Structures are given as structure tokens and as C-alpha cells.
Length: 102
Image (tube, rainbow, N blue to C red; front, side):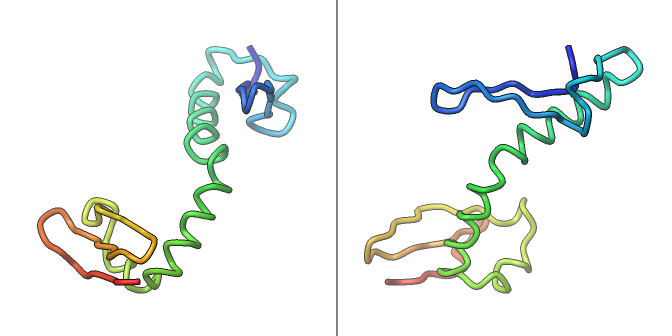
């Protein structure tokens, strides 16, 4: 096993080096923790970074980024989001924060 991630996207198998030269590095007991960290980072961030950036851009067109910065990930839940001229509501864990109508 090498320091790479292999995954399927729309029926095509892709291989990505988790670090430069990763295809030529074997996973050993000494670098196992690094491999797991790099693999998790790639799967949870790297593979979806483009989609996440597109989502954030669209969200910030509806709700200014500055309005969301006061909350951390635990305080902000986005719920009941309906587009197409209907109201869009953003909720915290316990209260309605604000509502935007299109």
C-alpha cells in the first residue's frame, strides 16, 4: 500500500498522491498515522473542496458572509431551506435567527 487514495468518480477510477512522491512510498508502521491523517484530510476536504466552494458562494449571495461569521459550526444549523421564490429560513439550535424572502 502506498501513500495514495484510489476512488471512483462517475465510473472512472482515479488515483491521487496524498503527498508528493506518495506513489513511491510504502505505508509502514512508522508512517501509518501520517497516512491515515492524509487520507482523512483528502476524503473529507480535498475531494469535495470544489463543490464546497460553490455552495459557499451561493450561500453568501443569499446571506452575507459577515452575518454568518458570528456563529461557530455548533451554533448554526441551516434548516428548512427552500428556494424558488419561497422564504428561506436559517435556524440556530433553539431560535429563528432571520428569514429572507425572495
